[in-house]
Amino acid sequence: MTHDTYFRLLDGFHSARVLVIGDVMLDRFVYGSVERISPEAPIPVIHVDRQSDMPGGAANVARNVAAMGARAILLGVVGDDAHASDLRVQIGASPEIASELIIDASRPTTVKTRYVAEGQQVMRADRESRSELDADVEQRLLAAFVRALGEVSVVLLSDYAKGVLSISVTRVVIDTALKAGTIVIVDPKTRDFAKYRGATVIKPNRAELQVACGHPCSTQDEVVAGARLVLAQGICGALVVTRGKDGMSVIGSDDTTVHLRSAAQQVFDVSGAGDTAMAALALGIAAGGRIVDAAALANIAAGLAVGKRGTATVSTGEMIAELQPTDPGQKAQKVLSLESMLHLVGRWRDQNLKIAFTNGCFDLLHPGHIALLEHARRAADRLIVGLNADSSVRRLKGPNRPVQSEVARATVLAAMGSVDAVVIFSDDEPLELIDKISPDVLVKGADYQPEQVVGADLVISRGGKVLLAPLVPGHSTANTVKRAASSST
Image (cartoon, rainbow, N blue to C red; front, side, top):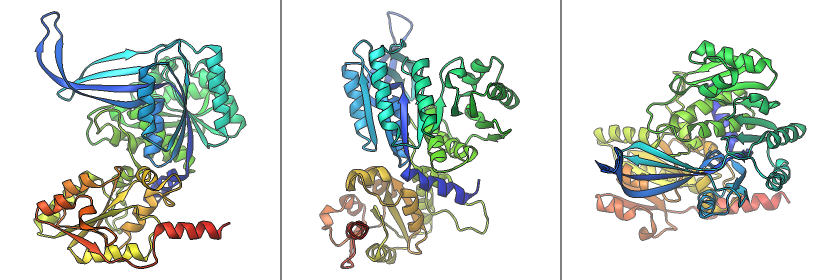
């Protein structure tokens, strides 16, 4: 896949809408330290420092869809308990997710509690029910599915074998989606893939494929042979098999066989990496990509996810930062991850170059933006722009913004001669970026007062300065959007 194709597909994530149905759960991480072995049994005693909750299972797939700039509809089942409330709070932190969680008082909300000491997971405790849904709950779930189906282009089945995606529910979901002409992608957790007959793509890991096909899947050739056995039964159109450190394989009913090497640079935690890959695969297909191209993006996303602690998400900004031009004649990539940005900053410091930093949404670039960037660049030798991710813009500006995806906005900024580097951030404010980059000059528009500029006190305390750039009258993104909306009515 060409560099331009990657960017085109990533840009398409912004307009995608995906329905995720399956086993939602709460991922709870309990962090602490081990200083002794229990006198009661040969087990470590964990001194607990803190606890962190995250959406897990199907909810983590939806969370990754949202982090990648798309919209998700999430359907699942929870218990009538405090853990369900905790899960709703975590899902609610992503406004791009519209969730409908059906309450089943007869079962607990699924919770996976991981105990972590000195960066290592020492134990996991699961609270769950694997029984199938009662008929009433099943019907309520399917009714919600039918209501939501017309709003999406892709349906994801996130099956963790907790009882929600029974054979009957799965059959109705797939058949209804296919009748509507909707793509169906499955993350399986069952011994018999025939349950998913009719799916567009099934995404098992190597162990799941081995159980389903009944043959070893240790080697690349064995994975292909196992996938061909599944395809020969006419169950799906293609399999995307994740193979851990060995990467990912795409095997299609049209004789496609493509192997992708792992994109992981380092592995801290594999929790939820399959969910991240699932989200990227679905969005790549929703954006019009071939399955092979979408799988290549999923491979990049999974490689980024395992380099993070906990049940992590990956943004399109991070994926862009991993893409470097393959043509020697192309200019160096300006859109960088924070890690790559800090390496670049270090080189600039070694050259005694002064660094300026500014930030914003930069949606629909206008003369006011250009004047700000040029003013900032004149104040230093290099200019770094912090760009709000799509999820951040929606929180700040409302559900109809941004007009352009973070991929498009970053691409336009990177094309500016006044801009030397762009880093996309998901927080509402760029304080972490400013702290780590430690710019010599912090630049904002003159509609701010110095004390209102985020990070101003930090920069000044380190010997830097705050610069307020003059405004260009009559230009703002909000007014541009309003004019465009009024002219179209």
